[in-house]
Amino acid sequence: MQSDQEITQNQRIEEAGSLAIATKGLTKALGGANVVENVSLEVPTGSIYGFLGPNGSGKTTTIRMILGLVAPDAGEVEILGASEPRDRQLKLSRVGAVVEGPGFYPYLNGFNNLKRFAQVAYPAQRRSNPRIRMLTDADISSSLELVGLLDARNKNYRAYSLGMKQRLAIAAAMLWPRELLVLDEPTNGLDPQGIVEVRDLLTSLNQNGLTIFVSSHILSEVEIICSDVGIMGEGRLLFQGSTKAFRSSLGDEFVVETANPGLAESILLQFGFAEPDSIEIQSGRLSAVLITDEIERVVTALVNGGVGIRAVGKSSPSLEEAFVALTGRSGHAR
Image (cartoon, rainbow, N blue to C red):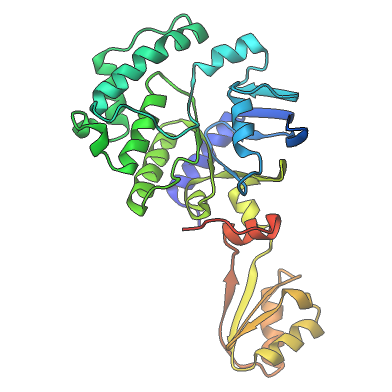
């Protein structure tokens, strides 16, 4: 059953019917070898899109090309519906990004750090969009309130926790009105409390209409908040679609608890309900990916064959299990 949050998010994506980010054949070579090759992304407006892949898979280079920080050798980038360079530059003024780790002055408080950042960033923002105005103190306070740091506005940055520092970086990215937020590993190095803080913030921002594109290697967090995922491997896009579709790409597992798992296995194979290499037996528990959707027939065949069943059900693979099956490498799930 879908949660209210999932239903609202899905409705927003369906209603938008557009793409916040679209790339076509994006390619970049470094040192004579392609680090990104023929990547075509489709990030739905209103989604939280998880961009996943092992270290060195080309995620950060792709993000840099999307943001115009690195020129692609081939391919096209469209942001918020704009593909022409001049139009795309204007749209970039509606994009907030945190690509590197947050860098602030340790002896300035949160408010003054944001104020200084706004002063430095204003000329570039104005070049992207001449109608952008200089921010007021009230604007800066609003950004701090947005990320839950208004009460810590007078605390020195060096006294911030890691989660607070990351939220301040997101506040800096959100100083001007945004439609899209791009984050590269926003929970990297955070303790569990910091991860929860950032997760709750991103969920709240998305519920208020912001599209979020987030690269991460913490698969458990992606599984919680992301509606869509793109999986990178060795510079190529291996999968793209909804998180649910990616998890189900392995197929749901049929699970039965019985004192006769060996007999249950032979019956499943006899009736052609499962492939041999999909069946696993562990201490009175058999799991298998079924070829048929008619679970009632499977259970009836087991019972008629003399298998005593203590419990039966279906188990969906986790995001990490699907990730490992696709890339051959484990993620850093937490």
